[in-house]
Length: 71
Length: 520
Image 1 (cartoon, helix red, strand yellow):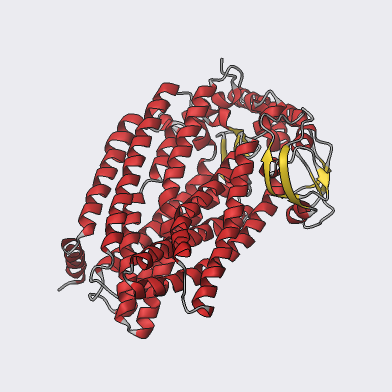
Image 2 (cartoon, rainbow over the protein chains, first blue to last red):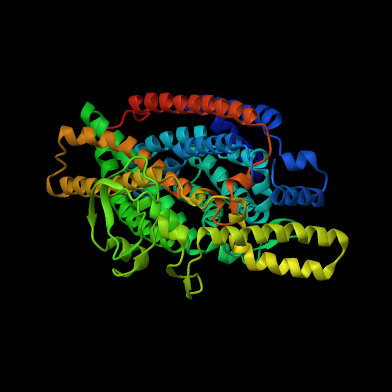
């Protein structure tokens, strides 16, 4: 058996023989889904990346933020 | 930052604190339990005693539960950087980017690769390879912590960087200065060791529960021996690194030290408060006694903070008024500026940044050089320029003071506890009374309280700064709607509480079941 097959088999067997691990994997997957597919997408955009195309624009914006008093 | 919406800052801070504190519920157990498992498996490897394998596997299961529920909770902090703290995120980009990238590439992959071998590899890989994998998981987990703690240490003491006014970013000029700054070294060692102590108390507490129930006696006794030796060594080292951290705070963040000790008026031969109650509503200049009562050790604060029992320790009032002598980072004696003078310097730096930008847009290189020089000369106090009231450099004294004393008090309690347990093991043939077994269980929540209190001291004591002296939270926060932050605050509260309940339920079920194949 090739090395890659052996590694895949190792993981497959490991996951298959899990008991408590199955519940944990479900929790991990739900958690990652909530974090990346819901929170990150709908609630936590990277503001500077979203609003500006280049680093120069971002620098300019932050300098304005840092040097302009907010009213 | 006049007329700034403080509710936005406060909600953003509250949200970050909530996520960081919940994240820190999961992390320390991972850091310490990984090493305890590695020690146990090493004994199994050396002795071939199947009971040690059973013991290792039992604690490995609890480690797995904690790891699985806690993994990736820290990523939410990075989400918050990009959304709620975008100015900060941009301002520190390069300093944070490098350590976090190394964390992602090196430690995380090392950890996650070998964790699979650790869980799936029993009887499938050689004993030696399995043992090496367990040790690498422990090292990987601790290396992960290194990089984020280096980044946090930089926020306490921004070393190894310079500010580039063209990009408004801090750029690293010396990676080693960032990595090996004395604050970073102490912070890393102190923080990971606190995880070791917590894990040791966790193992002892659960083993004590088994002993109370009369179950898994051999597993419990062996676990207690390993955990109490590991715990005692770790807790002594924790005290040592705690002293190192406090020394660094005295040199680099004197206001934090003053808050930690409730020291309003500086003095030579300053006493260390062992226990005390602060006067409610105390202001720094109201001439009220800061304490309702206190027990103190004369001269000890001077000695611990400055390695001389006669040294002057500045209080809150001195730091605001200035004019006391201190030694700067290059070892030169200097007279401290007042907060008002620092605010002046900060405003010059901010104005110079604005003028530099205009000069750059106008292509006026002479003006650029002039303003650049002004920025460099005043950048040390850049963050003060956003403040209008000198009082605003005072952190929440009661919260910092009580958190610090709870942390230190519990730290010494843990040392005494480990010594007592080891004494009973070696000189009283393991005769641990029922009350001590119950106390051992109580030590688990106390360990978590001490651990959280440590972070409160580090972070609340640094306020109002996000980066000490350079960037206050009002300048670091994104201009977004405060209500959006409120919504996500409660969202996180629900998610993290659910995760914590899930962890506790699964953990308790697993503990009640005990080792998979019974054991002794």
